[in-house]
Image (cartoon, rainbow, N blue to C red):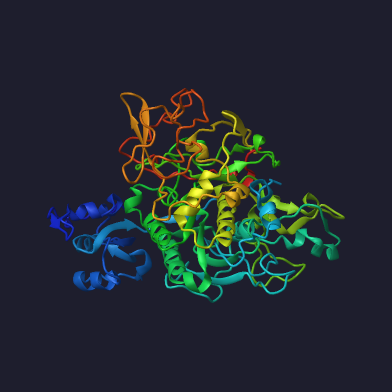
Length: 594
């Protein structure tokens, strides 16, 4: 039966003057998708409070408008609700409402030489393991019944806290709605970040398994705070993620939460300034929490494919490297599926960093109630049983038995916790660092001159090939180096911002300039590949910019046959995503690149 469109609801044309002397139509405060509801239809929304609004704006908005809001997230200046179009119109006229956005769905992105390639072994040998640093893993949860966050399967002392926002935006701690992993993605992410690799040590000898490869995380001393926002299918909503970020801010001091890991995301259709996920991430950043976000796995679709909230200029956005099984960085390449910048709509230069993320071995999810020797696998592991790591892949064993302890995945989701672990290590070394200082140090010490100009990647399942250009919109500042970051002697100025710049393209001259959030132009009128390359050897600040005067790319212009622009421009008025949302390639996550 055809639905009848509401004809009674009309969007007001009244212009309201705010206390900031800013004139704005109420309809400008509402996402276009929410202006096309059917008669009587309700939809889930996120209400962003006005910048500068006093604490507790949500209840005041309810009192003035008579519109009931479901939950209030004061730390990130947002509320959630399920509303009709008329209720949305009413909200849009309130002086403390900045923007009303859809409560959009989010999802997880899903033997490589990972931790050792970025210097985790050397950091551990020097006494840096991220000890005492709390990392909020906002994902599908983290398994209780594994041995990687305690001591030899004893008390999981580093599993500091757990909470779920899947069914209750106010939080739940009781099974089956708790911080346990009921899907399989979050445990793998946490294992990359901070797993001890217990069953790849001599502890496994009692089971006649004699490991020769140590499957461990980057920051083995970091504390894990599991915040579950993705359900048993790996899907969630904006409001769940926002609630988790809000909780992390509120509990920062209690658990020493200095890092948030977001190995998830979604496409976007508005500027980061109006995107509720981005604004929540910014709120955490401004409260002193480093937010590390996956770039997305849409790189095979071309440029302008970074997802939200990785499109926000403040956060550290991470792309994925294929190490090809070696620590020799001259052999490393960016994966074909790693999303590329500049971002749609705002044209922010992303990603910021790249890190190992192809075919990563890490902790396998086990379901609640599993006992030693009888490990019930989570849905992701059951569906992709071929990705269970065989014992003989990391140990001398009597048979090629699928390991109960380790799983293999690829994606920027896997690269993100590598960087989060590095952040924890850096904060252990110097706890006084701000998020902006951390971002500067990691970008300034990343390596980039080891990358070839381009190469051809192959999907091992389909055999399809993809040409990958190692340009700044693909590799960012370069590949993470924990060793170089720990040795970095320059402490960046704490008061300055490390927000990623905006790329401005002049269609008449085919020239690109980069503009900082302060309005400074960094690269003049030179080509992105010329003498004013955006990724030079200097620091990130102002005239001494990380995108400084020393070119690493030579004279070859980016505007060639494999142009950033491709068949579909990223510079138009519409988002790169167009009218429909893309779906990521599952084979990229499960099979990776060869």
